Structures are given as C-alpha cells and as structure tokens.
Length: 108
Image 1 (cartoon, rainbow, N blue to C red):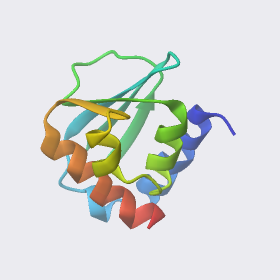
Image 2: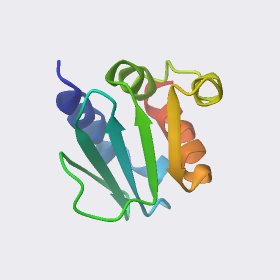
Image 3: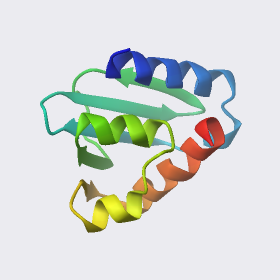
C-alpha cells in the first residue's frame, strides 16, 4: 500500500469515529525527505487529505516515508526521532504532540 492510501485509510477511520479529534482545527503538512508533500486538514471533526500544499500549515513535519509510516501506525518514538533529527517540526510543536495523542486513539 502506498503512503497516500495509508493516509486515506486513516482519514476514513477518523471520519467514522471523529470524537477524539472533534476540537482540532488545524492543518498538518508532511514533507517527505524522498520528495512529496501531503496535507491533512482537521476541521469540525472532519479529516481531509491532500497530496499537495494548498493552505498554510499550522504544523509541518519533515521526515522519511518510512518514519511517516511508523508515525501513522503509532510505532514511532517521536521524542527519539525528534532528538536524533529523523523528525523535524516547523510551526506549532504542541500540535505535533497533539497529533501523536490522536493517532493513539486510532492505532494505539
């Protein structure tokens, strides 16, 4: 399965059970080191995934595709990844932490 399909599968799951993200109103951007940009929009309990950057992101995560897969499956130690430079965060760091908490509800 490609990374886009993984995003779409997770977005479907989140849209079916929006309670954990009901209060989140943010745009996350994922810049892959191998190339490629994805944005995930959270608004009013609805998740949309875009394969481009059409809006200003509140939080941008820069990481490899492998680490993004681990993050989406709640299998990445984000603290270690951040401290070792495998994960870079631009924008609101608190939103990156919030994303990790949300992912635990779906892939915990």
